[in-house]
Amino acid sequence: MENKLYTPPQNKSPELIFWFCYPAINSFALSSLGYLWLLKEAEMLPDVCVEKITTDTETTCFMPSEVDLMAFSFSFDFDFLNILQILEKYKIPFRASERGASHPLIFAGGPVVSANPEPYRDFFDFIVIGDGENLNTSIINLIKENKNRPRPEILKLLSEIEGVYVPSLEQKTVIKSTKKSLECIYSTILSDDSFFKDTFIIEVERGCANCCRFCLACFLNLPIRFVPIEELKRVIDLGLAHTNKIALLGAQISAHPKFNELCKYIYEKALERPEIEMNFSSLRVDAVTPDVIKTLVLTGSHHSTLAVEAGSERLRKVINKNITEEQIFSAVRIAKENGLKGFKFYAMIGLPTETQEDIDALISLARRLKTNFAGFDISFGVSTFVPKAHTPFQWFGHENIKSLEKKSNYLKKEFHKLGINISISSAKWDYWQAVLSRGDGSFTQFLIDTYKLGGKSGAFKQAARQNNINTDYYASENWDLNTRLPWDFIELKSPPKKFLQEEYSKIL
Image (cartoon, rainbow, N blue to C red; front, side):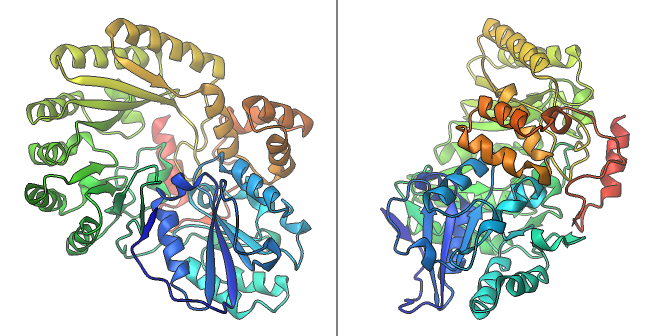
């Protein structure tokens, strides 16, 4: 059952029919904050009929030939597989160049295509680069007002909107759309079918000022922006009027200038209503305080997460993760003393300049944490470094799969000896993620063939061979600073490419 926290106007004779697609099952769509917010914005437009489409949608109100506009939320690199699945399901050609007047205009937005749209450029008539709020409604209104004009004319008008990329027009520069002031985005639909059942999610801030050199979420969302505290309190009250579960979302929640006041507000609410449950998306080591932990514990959280990224202080400095071992131990001590049961620590392997000593330092850190905090549940989640566009590490390649698998097996063996749970991402799948992250406009048939071959790791390999794609070049090679990058045409107002180059040079 879905409980909408808004009432759309009744569009009995809509001027525009819009399919808003999420490339996963409905329970995931119902837990995607950005998707739900943009869905609400579209549904509130007069004379527009919006239909939510997911991979498990069984029936639709409209035939594809009746749809004017179709959009995809594109948040994860492998989402392209489900995007192609949805297009195939409704018998819509994969390539924009093969679609005609009987097909909807199709676009995408989200972090994947905002960072590097080039591998997917041929699938979409246009692409939104950057923040989607307001921009999506401008797009929908423009198309609604010009729907009877020829497609090339509509696309030309769209290209004049800041943040809209029309691949067929070969724009020299596209300026990323950045919303200057942040309104409070929250879950607009609550459902027991959601992956996060009946949870009211609130975006507290966007971006991160720490600028870890590998982090797309930071550099793509600069500058960091905060929702005003009074607005957050109002939205928390709205959520608690409908559910007892709330979650705070943001890359650097604890950097909010009123973070302690926010925690105190939730703490007091929980004293009045003991059934309230609350979670943070993550905690920073230097933001673990007794009040924060007490708020988590009072609202039902027994465990939380901390990102340390690397075991040695040397490597943390390389990636600009400026936390000390003393801070890590202090955070765990505070958490244990104030009732938290455990932490899951996130780390990476395969980072630039990493040595065996850095790997051993991670094992040593885990050992000493367990020894010093007996009875406190400690586990680790480890991923392999994947280069991302618009970061200082975009020029570094993904480490050799065999080398990473050797490190992974070594870590698993040593952590097993310690009696500490560890999960490590697949180096093979992270390799293909790296290929997509640094891919270019030559990928269209390669991606189509990968989908047709089943979308597994072997399908990527076979499709690359069929299309003469040297995937090692995209995934594994270190690129020169002067290399023309596929995404160089995207202009981020902050930071400029020169800054990224300077940060890269600091590493060397």
